[in-house]
Length: 264
Image 1: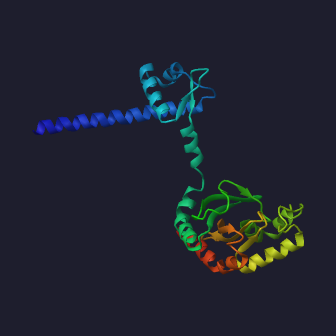
Image 2 (image 1 turned 180 degrees about the horizontal axis):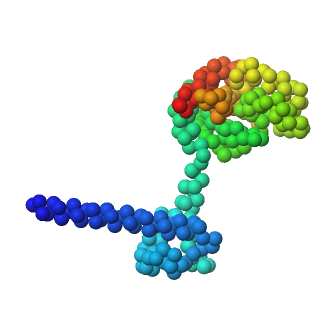
Image 3 (image 1 turned 60 degrees about the vertical axis):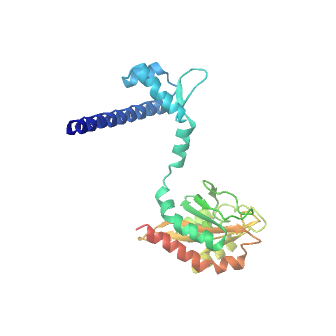
């Protein structure tokens, strides 16, 4: 009985080792396909990997079934497939921030029944990295991976309010685009708005990027008071009114602090 048990363990270990080896070989082939400037043939893959053609054919077939490689109809060689490109697109530099902010964003969405955005500062604008929508059929558009301007968005105004004077002056030297009839395109008026943002600690945008959308944002700082991101509540102007946004200011500052505490 003991002998049979030892024999079974050896067989299990052998199978596990074989499976790990197969995974390693498949990953090597995938990497080779990814690094190739043009579609690559089975023969070339066999030569580069040192595997026999049958093994390469079997492993490439598995990768193809899962969409990680695809066969070029003209050259009959292999190139990266949609699944590999999708996986790369989903991996971004803000994954950790998004995971830590998600719980707070979901609570805020449930409380307000409006869209909640997470965005990060960029040199000439802000980039939305996550968005959670309510169940309402009428809501704001999807802003994920969209760069937004500074002078007509709530998170953009926050970023302007936190810049050193010389950087702010430099950015406001150029004419401000009049995107909607509500956009603040006058430099003096925008400076007054920025000063108000500094006093409030939050920023509002009322129909300035889209006449039908309003938004309010608060900044998220790390423990060293470095600006990390912005959290925003956005919604259609008929539902998320200016008065309602102002009433949400303290809650949004609280939510920003919750996210900041999670970054420890």
